[in-house]
Image (tube, rainbow over the protein chains, first blue to last red):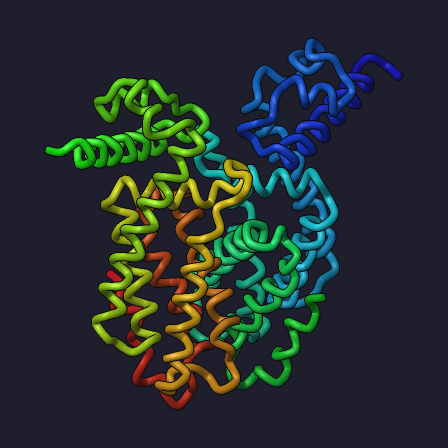
Length: 209
Length: 209
């Protein structure tokens, strides 16, 4: 391997190690020494890439958000209608939260409001934008109630989902996450879709399993 | 003052000081020395009451939750219908989040999942129980759609509200909180209330200002 590639591999190992340690011990109790050990690198090598625990946490969030947005782009490109795409995206993120330690740690860190100054807002802004685009498409497709503003709906659904996964982690270690995501859509849908389209769209929460 | 009363006053000053410092610096950067200085007590006096920063944070959450539940009890005793009571409670908590530094710090700490092991779940459980009771009353009052389960609705609304206030803090320092709470109810209501009661209940979000 050339030197640059080796540095990249080391950096990725450190980010994965940081995610594992943050996930296990929480941010407060995680130490740089633990993270270096978990990643199989020396503390010196770690400090070559990251100057502080804050930088490590931001790198975990960045990598989580990159993976989530990459998976989201794949879902969006499948070309489903806008509202259905939103439902499928909510399942996709829940699956990442079950299976990917970097996503688990990154999402958890990005809801830990008091850890970061300045706060980490880019992931929320990206999601709000993506959701508004999809709901705008849903308006064109006749899947939203007349008068329901796509931007307002995004500013409800994205934070609501954020809270649902957070409380699910707190009270059940995410074991009830998929069920709670389905409940969220079950409660939201009758108020989102036009009465005339209800029979066609009422089964959307069944996509969640 | 007798000795016990003096100790109680000191304890309250420390909790208020901890809330102020956690609010200003975040949990990670807050030091015991800062908190003692803010409270106007010596570090020795502080350690007499609280053994660690973790204990201080839990005390702030306890005091926040006590104040919130006390205010909630007052609202509930006013005897409005169940669904209207839920809307008024969501406004009441938003007002506390604007005006009371202990509530600001306590709510923020209780969404910082990675800070506590074991996690702080009692406040969520209390809210889920209170919401389920009120939605059960709303069923009797004919204000919920037939078939909508009050427990499921509580498990959507409480986490959704949690997320709405969290994202509002992150992206706007809560300046848009009241608007986002109104949006939440505006989106939820058409899916919650029976079509036959829509004209009577559609103005509920106007209680929020």
